[in-house]
Image (cartoon, rainbow, N blue to C red; front, side):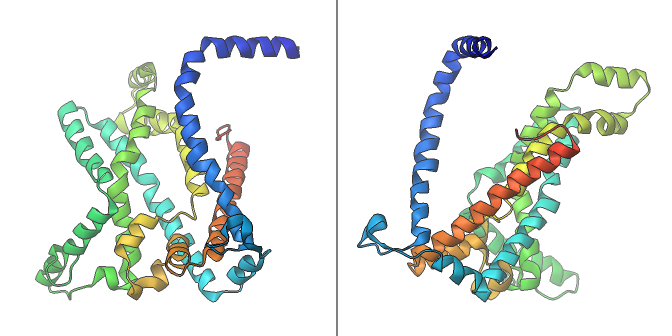
Length: 306
């Protein structure tokens, strides 16, 4: 039985050998840039001194982890990271799905392409550029948003320096930047739905809303499930680039996340061991979240990452 399986596997490999060959450069690059650097995890357990190197530095055991768990500032950044990530999950995750469904309902291809192009554009702009645009648009002195607020009789708001408004700006700007690009995979999923299912629904008298609700959305479940699992696995990645380009010390108490904390402690204060320990903690939690979410979704439905 085992030998038959091996023969079939070899036949499949031989059949797709050129596709495997095309995959080889990507696997090599992934190994070099994602797995080789994992060697640096050792720094989390060492009193790292640059002059001694990683292997030459003294072992510190779990000292950095003890420092991390006894630091009041760590729990504040952990809370900020989870809150911002949950906001992204609640408001940001459904946004590309809704946009894909809306684009699918546009019958005029020209308008559809124009809307798609406009929605994709922000994805190609770096957060340095978007940060500059947001600072101008939301400026309390010359920003158009505050101009409209004052025109309606309101008071000027310093959105990027006000802890009450900063997370709202963060979530809305994040959705604006990623919603178009995120909708591509859902549109590809919709394009693969058998057209005969819609024709049968039309014969049964289903309108456009009923077709979307009973055919399009259920057929998107596998893609939605996989992306949801990956999103939950990245729940401690609250978006370093965006926050780093928008925040100031005035909003640290609501905006400082694990990644920005690692940046300050590791690169600015040169506390490499502690910063690596915090980064390792974040990745281990993310790993177990992916495993747990995949297990739960497999128990609830038949879909999962593996």
